[in-house]
Image (cartoon, rainbow over all chains, first blue to last red; front, side):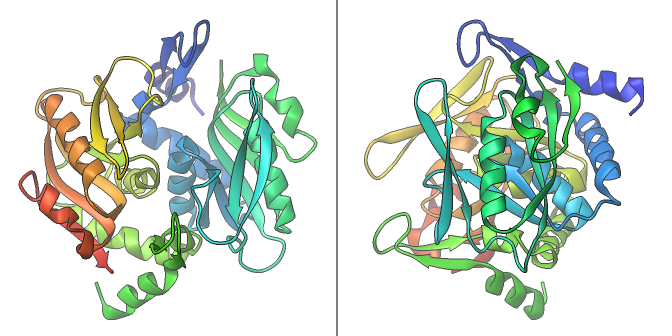
Length: 178
Length: 178
């Protein structure tokens, strides 16, 4: 990625102080999505990165991961799988819980989401913070006899050490770090 | 759309009985997304429908509307705007409430999502049921001095009369009806 494109992407991401709570500087990628040039350059970069890698499915994490994951799946002509927070998927599902600051939450996959055996999966989300959701996602993917080729995030926050949670499972790629 | 493609799409959508509650036959488009051929044919159809229409932004409704909306925005090289359920968007937002069976919920838009004046907007979601969310979305779009060019849904459920809620605002297009 050229410095010019990197600058375009960074400038398109809004930083909102004290969201969702006091002291957090929230990186908002919705402002990047509003700008076709920035969004398209970002997707060109990801398409180029993954075009020659053997991938069967792209799993997008609920909900902003749906955006980058589905566009990448469309561009690479791969199946797209929506990994959802609990209670959103119908039919037979499997669940994994992950810890929140207080309590826990769950993510789910439909058991029929990967056709055939040993699917190769790229996990996509907008942002890597502590890595809890992505780690739970990988557990679900493994339980369905598939493997994670890579974790791909638009933004990484290295301070929160999310990579440490994931690196034993698969490589972790972040387009931008803050 | 040819009958063959229509059949492919219909066969790719799973019907799950009694979700999210007793008596409802849930149309699940996640099974269509898993299949690159079906997903791609659907998006070809939508791209073709909107390619010559003046649109500035595509607004995708939280959360499955993000999938079809962002892919369409990418293919048409338009800005994508994520309309979210309450509490998910940072920064300055405007809100509209809409009725649920019991109580109500709210949708939000960031106030800076449309650049310039009088943006032309296509609203995209996976499914039109009663039309409550889409109607609230249109109100938000109007409050930001933009106009709705069309409401576009992958699936319509005519029994629930969602079109009646929306038709005074803009045309309503559904790819498939059940």
